Amino acid sequence: MPTTLTLENIPDEVYQRLKASSKLHRRSLSSEAIACLETVLLPRRIDPGERLARARALRAALQRTRFEAPDVDATKREGRP
Image 1 (cartoon, rainbow, N blue to C red):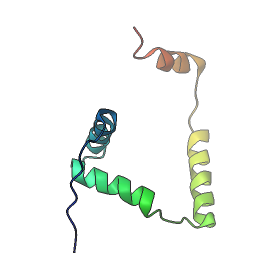
Image 2 (spheres, one colour):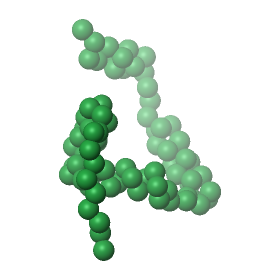
Image 3 (cartoon, helix red, strand yellow):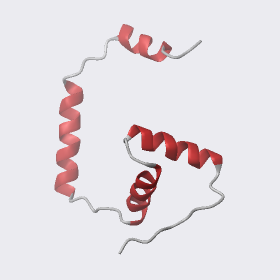
Image 4 (cartoon, rainbow, N blue to C red):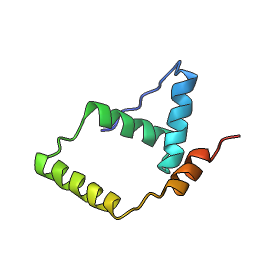
């Protein structure tokens, strides 16, 4: 049976990061806090073969993407005053 937990004195920076993360993942604050706790306290062991397959897929996806110098420069300038 699930248990209720109340947290007090959460540092502002931790709260703001949790809030931003919950918005990004489209979860409630409680669901996001549970997901974060599960990630840290109940890490899922990934089979080395699965990890290698993921790395190869990521590498293949990145190789299909060309990064041209003007695009990189424009991306670096985004958000700067």
